[in-house]
Length: 274
Image (tube, rainbow, N blue to C red; front, side, top):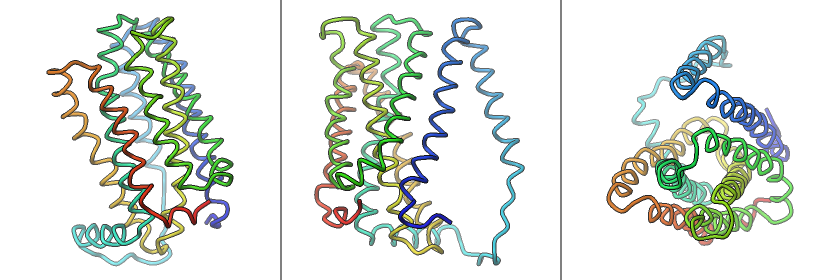
């Protein structure tokens, strides 16, 4: 168990490990894409998921005592009730929903915009993953110190507002001076940095505000909301992009990212977290 003062550092280290793996994968993937092509890369991705499944089969968890058997629906309702009655955690959850909705919208329309409308080569676009992972690693490393200096509320609110111009670089790259790929790289770096800062900075609120025996239930309810919004945003965004084109949807992405600041601005209890 990690004591409360060390939670930010622990989450930061976890994020650095994850993003380090992403950085390696992005570098190897962009090189492999140019050498072996997209079909072979898709097969390699499938093999990677299969290996992940095999590794997870070796995980053994021995609970200290048998967990009571409760109906899944009742557990979710109980977790959602606790989540809703914990103001700081609820504000972060709503903010995360807006951020994830915007991110999924961007993930849906940005490849179409870059590959079809801008005519950038797939291998070059894949290399942007390396830039994105580097930004995420920097954000994960900086989050604990930034939270200590600025406070959670200021940091998360600022990250959401700064995401508006960050995403705007992609939407406006055709009209900005210089090469499009340069602005796209700047957007990828800035966006990943801000999202990583937000993810690490707020991660310790759940274990600090919820009783240990309720962590799994409340965490499940929270992730159901923050992750559940993503496929909905992808479907609606894809349909809207087919009708209006990708650029207006990139603008919506920026607005959703900025709107993630609104639930945080209204919640005073977030000022207690540093």
